[in-house]
Image (tube, rainbow, N blue to C red; front, side, top):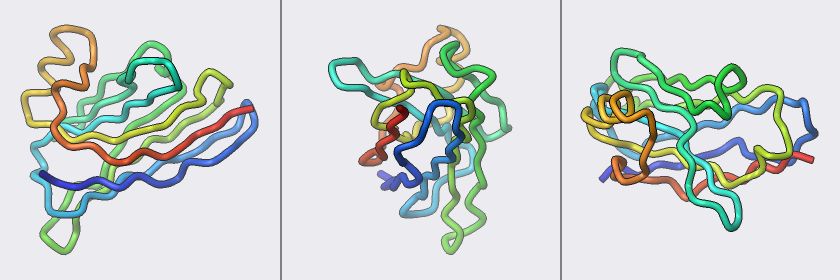
Length: 134
């Protein structure tokens, strides 16, 4: 599977903005589905935002209007593609370890049909980047 590396996590103040990035270690098909999840200590992994090959997006209610997912598709093997998460008006509740995830084309239809983002639908994960909001 593709390997993913997140970056951009930091310690910030409430109300600040932050942009996370996720780089793929190898070429990924532009038809795939990419997503951002987060996990705070003691909590389950929570799906935040997903984007498919057509640019269609889906957001969890907890971040809708504050977070924006986007991506630059891989052009060829020399351009692996990057996933982003722009986070605005950060709150203390946003403190967590943030992960990017890769899934097959079928992940977005499942998200839209069920109204949730299940980690089970994604096959490759990064190691996470810590976001702390105080």
